[in-house]
Image (cartoon, rainbow, N blue to C red):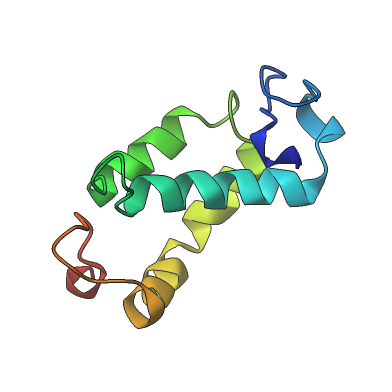
Length: 101
């Protein structure tokens, strides 16, 4: 329920801010937004990886906990490996995980 809260307090449903947001919600917020950006949805195509990563970087400290964003980028190679193994690769996804690195 807390993954829609924002680090700066502008989220919902309770308007929690900073460490008031449970760690699980802060982690899930980054993962959920990255997934939503990087995969095709019924209402939009997948964004290219550089755009996805740019949005996360730009939202560090406003939408997202800076430490969680830093941890995400520290393990980016591992996440790419997971997407390569388990992600959907088709014509609807702009990110071709198998062609990275």
